Length: 363
Ligand SMILES: *[C@@H]1O[C@H](CO)[C@@H](O)[C@H](O)[C@H]1NC(C)=O
Ligand SMILES: *[C@@H]1O[C@H](CO)[C@@H](O)[C@H](O)[C@H]1NC(C)=O
Ligand SMILES: *[C@@H]1O[C@H](CO)[C@@H](O)[C@H](O)[C@H]1NC(C)=O
Ligand SMILES: *[C@@H]1O[C@H](CO)[C@@H](O)[C@H](O)[C@H]1NC(C)=O
Ligand SMILES: [Fe+2]
Image (cartoon, rainbow, N blue to C red; front, side, top):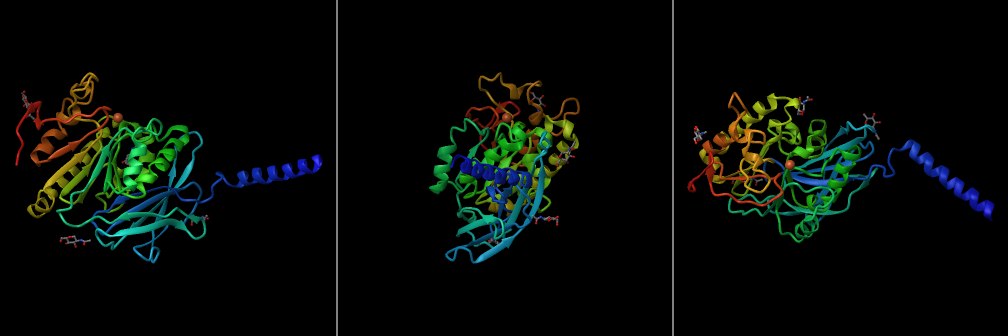
């Protein structure tokens, strides 16, 4: 019997180890890190997920009462991590079209051959400007010590929010352990982000390897009419009576990745604000809201670093010496109503302020 057991164990061991020679990961082709993002109009929803092995099929089956009577296919792209293991992940993106505004849809994603995700649901964006969108807004979450995660997951599934705005700093940091921190974070938010759109902007903790994992894994509606274009650094969308703009404050600090990105983004921001201020657009979306990671103002006990030249004043006032591409004047000029920021790990609300001076409300 002992010998038999030995042979049996040996055989199982051989089987297991030969599997791991041929396949990099124990899970073959199973969808994970599933999340939603809003498209450029209410008839669209983008489903993004990851497989850790090569899977070429990207399919979403969805529907209302007849839960899988519709089927949409998308495309796969490769995320190549720059860590020592040079891990690869397969990013699947599917755009769901012709959704009925305000309707609930069930869906799963994957493929017949390699397996399907659990069943999720979402509500297509309502398309009237009376729609008051309920957003949970936060930054600086982290993979570990994510103290609000449980409540966000619970409240999302109870239907308390229509969307999330995550104002930068995700996993602390996505690139660590050969990008596995990013995987773990994206899996943790799945029980939020597979149900409601998870709209993001980059923070300093996404900076590694030129923000490559952040760029690969999210699918924000870019100016190029693609999803995940402009590396998810800057984009805008409308929801209810709000025009929401996500942008990168990090271009001002990680200039080694390309100084021209500050200029490109500035020009895009100005164009987007001009467009949003066209009378017919501003009538439908009177509220213009921005989100960027590092704030223009802060007064917590963190040395007021956002006001200092060795801190991050340049986002507000412009680059040193040339005094250009500062965002405070731009945002004031085009009537931005609300600016959302993160990074300081504290909660603050400010009076309307411009150039270090508190003013009264416009309009
Ligand atoms: C949303 O409403 C606008 C204005 O009424 C309309 O032009 C557009 O077609 C609607 N979109 C959808 C998806 O219903
Ligand atoms: C995926 O497509 C590529 C390129 O066409 C092909 O080389 C590869 O074998 C395919 N992989 C699978 C798992 O089907
Ligand atoms: C960093 O990424 C951006 C956006 O994808 C790209 O435009 C830029 O050229 C990259 N910079 C470097 C140094 O690779
Ligand atoms: C900000 O205020 C200072 C004086 O306090 C003034 O010199 C400067 O021109 C103002 N800048 C802007 C952009 O209004
Ligand atoms: Fe930060």
